[in-house]
Amino acid sequence: MRRYSGPAPPKSWASKFAPASLYETTTWRAQALSLIAVHLPRFTRHHFAFLYDDTSSVLLPLTMLCLCKAFALCTFREFAEEVVPYIPSHLKRELIRYHAIRAPLSDAYLRALRGSSSDECSVDGELLIIGPQSTLEEDFFTHSTSPTQARSESWDIEVDDSSRILHTFILVHSPLSTSTLLSLPPSITHLALIHVPQMLPIHRLPVALPLLQLLDLSYNDWLAKDEESSAFVLQRVDWRRWRGLQVLGLRGCCIPQALEKKVNLGRWDDVLIVV
Image (cartoon, rainbow, N blue to C red; front, side):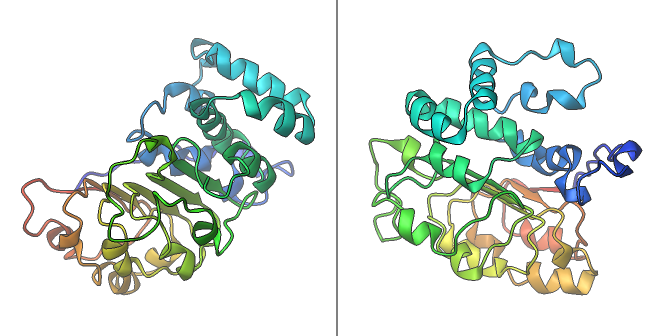
């Protein structure tokens, strides 16, 4: 089991100009996203540039500089109607990632970047929700899941447009209903449910999401109260079903005594448990 630590929020943020809570600070969001970020393609240093003392050495790509300028100068209507249609999907994803740490986008901006068609639920295969600025509707996946993402016996068939298949879902500091959790597309390989206010039935996910490679449950209060409460949630999971699981994030959580043994039972390679 490997342990990591992160930077503490600056004391100066305790002033009257500070966000309403620790969970609405850029430093905390960066720490929350840091684990899954290093396992996603093209999540680069410029997303976290503000954490470095010498930020002048970390320059944004020209495309991002232009997008950020357009975002700052345009009204929402101008941005949605005159800019978004010309942004490639991978740059939309970059824009969402960039703002996820610095100033999370609202539901309206996220919807505009995802597109208006009924089968778009992600941007380049990634859905990133940062609360309290944005939330997820309870019927989001049942209404916006495309036929290639639908839960069926043929969910693993090869499709032509892989960028429209949801493979990464990240939700931070925002509520998530059980019905929404269980309607997640089975194509998901990377899942982060960080500081979700209510307890979630994690034990039902191995059947629902068989391809999972990374699961981050960090900073959830219902896993941090005591070892007994944490064990109630984690020991019920049939970890053997997740044969492809490589990383389990439990930062800020109480770790049941026998969890590591249970998670790695019968595996050739141990799961990296990050606490």
